[in-house]
Length: 410
Ligand SMILES: Nc1nc2c(ncn2[C@@H]2O[C@H](COP(=O)(O)OP(=O)(O)O)[C@@H](O)[C@H]2O)c(=O)[nH]1
Ligand SMILES: [Mg+2]
Image (tube, rainbow, N blue to C red):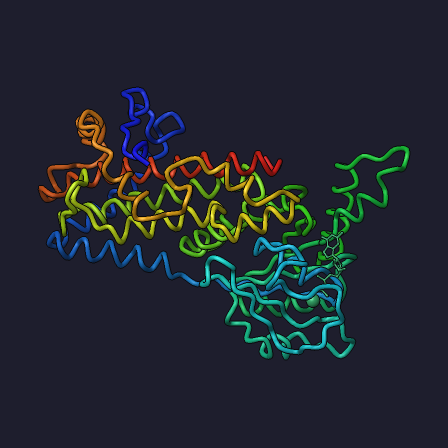
């Protein structure tokens, strides 16, 4: 398609290349300063190496989530939902069955294999011993635990939470199947959803008093866009280490515009790292490209964005089945150069964006953000890379928004 190679920039777009009125990309001073420091400390080669290592670490960070609770609490359904699967999808954890397995079952994320959700054995037995349970499930494996119940939290839930606390690990209480509670009450004359939710919340908190200041979230695995799921993710974003929260947010299913924006914020942070790692030194110039750059890093960044935004065929297929649409009608919403995926052709067309004017404007724009004098001569391609990666990200964001709209999930 020759239209791939068209120059689409206008001076106006350049002034707002970072979206959010121009603040987003430049405000991440800490990341830029870290990269610049690497350059001052080491030779340029070593600095790029170091930045690449950081990038790799981020790419390979593991996240293990342990989901526990009574049989029937909704553990398997939650495990499926957080992996973006419906209970009937291929590869989904079996639901509505009496648990027979006494060992944790790992469910790898469908597009991010380093993220694993563990369906843990039920804790309903009267003979339950929290300490033994924790060592049996290898508690040290999990970055955090989720304790689910669809009723009141019982003694076993509370004892388990106390034992996890003793081990100085994170845990969160989730009161599941809230949609059922709402449906059962909604026809009553004085029904008020918010009052009802806060009653359930207060009741849970009272019930859990002996555990200390613990957090309870009300959710429905049938619809993460309702109730407390977003609040739950807000809390995790505050409490998890930097790399772990990054893995978590990127792995979330795209169920709303809100989660798409959350993902975008995380991915934009990665752009500086990617730009430095890929563009700081003219490693192997690729003929015809605007800048000499490390193609591999750029490709892997754009692939992460594509996957995380749910634009891959497999994600679209699952979404189509869930909202009862034809997958082709969702795919048709991907109108950018990435319609056929993150292909070499699409990436090359992004990187051949010439717009010399854009680059000149960028020089002016960036010299305030990065002390360019402190970088090796080749590093001028860093701001250009930043600009191009952000452009790719924004194109995919637009696609993802159209898909959400088509699926009526915005
Ligand atoms: N309405 C509704 N039903 C749910 C929800 N979560 C689970 N269920 C249903 O509750 C039953 C038990 O769920 P399951 O995930 O198998 O529980 P587990 O035994 O803890 O793994 C199944 O019939 C699920 O479909 C929810 O959030 N809302
Ligand atoms: Mg189960």
